[in-house]
Length: 117
Image (cartoon, rainbow, N blue to C red; front, top):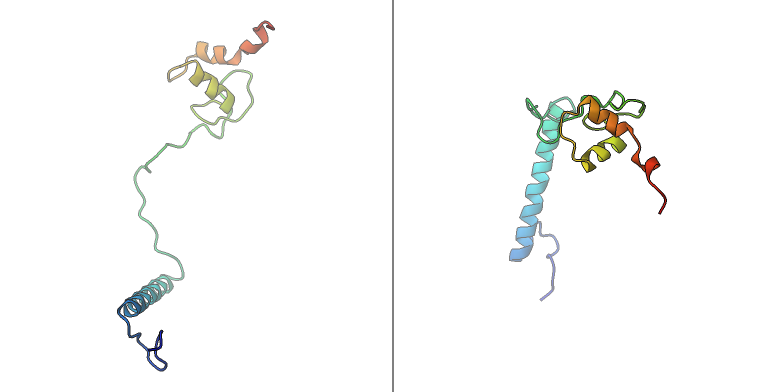
């Protein structure tokens, strides 16, 4: 008996082939419905509903301003600090919000005071 679809037949004869054929038909129909829906919306996909507050990490409000440490001109990344001072504050376990004394402490470069070993 020859394998594959018989010539001239639109629907495959085997059970697995029929199942694959039906899945393909349903996928095709779903794609056509989706395209028709998009076209009916003026060529744009439907807008997603907006949440009052988006989940996840909040955006830094001071990202456009500079670092809060005196004499540092770099852009703020998190908690009003540049990346270098943010890492140093985390390393020193400084809480939030940072006081003026803590900001001054962050501005001091402790590496300059280290003695060569």
